[in-house]
Length: 332
Image (cartoon, rainbow, N blue to C red; front, top):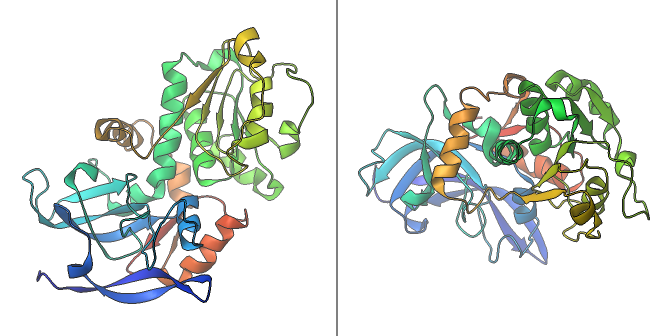
């Protein structure tokens, strides 16, 4: 291809104090420096994309900007030997879609250290069904297993279970033989969560605020995707020696708790980062998700959209009305 190639992207601009996203025609010559130029065929929608599209300066500092923290596609140009033109790659995390133009455009240019080779048997769409959300769910489950979590210990809770991370965590834990309790504020998704493998589905009132520093232990372990008060309440309900893998903050970044779950029950709070972790760690989980950890129900239920549908889909994230996995297909 030539150094100056036009392409389509869904780009966000500030207009009279508001942030507006629309399809625009851009040029690869204006992409940032990097060793690998990738023709993106698919991306995956995330809460962070919705924040970027709304003008959240904690995610994206300057506009105009192309969101999309996930991307998968074909290498077009490469300055490194291990990524040859024509090879398929996945890019998630690091600065992609935050302050570096992301997967909502048909091309990205990134450092080679951000790229993971496509696992055998996968294509770009399958990779983006999982995306950062699936990767994060896999990392959460892996941390619980590393801490010794086992099905015979008792039920495992997943908060925010109908969301992009939670739904994959539900299916993966069920696949591994755990009794899964899905916690969701969306009663209309109960049937879907049970289809994914949840043994029981309960409402947000299961994590209603209590003034007690500890309550009856209910769960052996948990995956928390929401943070805030719900996480504080979840910690009070974990059995002695159990663990909570924490990866989200949609309910807020504050954690109003005491040390009692930790010093009286030996509960472990495990932080999970899917953005800046070493590439080898990402590659390991991608490999598991493409093989033994494959979540076939999630793959079957994913919804594809085109760039023209991004605005409404991202607003649904901010309104708490989004569920399941949504894939951006640049060919739609």
